[in-house]
Length: 243
Image 1 (cartoon, one colour):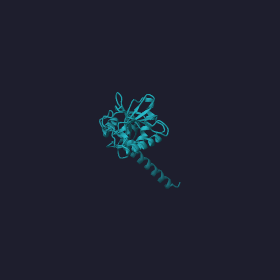
Image 2 (cartoon, rainbow, N blue to C red; image 1 turned 90 degrees about the vertical axis):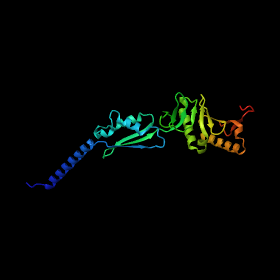
Image 3 (cartoon, rainbow, N blue to C red; image 1 turned 30 degrees about the horizontal axis):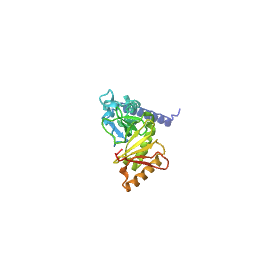
Image 4 (tube, rainbow, N blue to C red; image 1 turned 30 degrees about the vertical axis):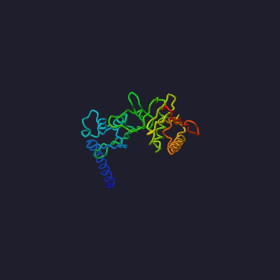
């Protein structure tokens, strides 16, 4: 019987490849983690420290670099990270050479709400606790109830995107009906903005009023600027006694 050497060579090569793959896979599993690489997406505002992240990853282990790759459960690590109120998104992965990589996106506070205790609202209108390591420079909101979080956050996000409004608005006072008063920088008057609707039009009305009265040196004579009415600005001057 004639021996088919081509088939034998094919089987030998296939067996060798399978063996090497299995051997490499097993060695890869047994390889120790020798380094942790942290990548913060928005690292200019550090509301959570690398040390805190490491503690969330380690839990009952003294150090991650003593753990074999086969014992790590990446989904569990991601879950623990996402349970931290400062973290919006997390991805954990392992490289072939034993580096544990962590990509983190922190939550982004856009306003600080006065209360007991104070807290932030993030850009999605959700409560976010104060950080012990970093204080964000954001507008202060007072008087707001939870049912108005989303719509007032929508207004704050619009303010942040408008260079003029971002420069001058330092606070928002929200009444029980959801009407908003804007507290402006460097001036004593308040701006009655009303509901968080028709925002762009109200911005334009306020800018026009501000520019006109500043040119005429009348800005400081007003105590209240009302933007609630369509196509007009109703401004009330201070009384003689300063009220």
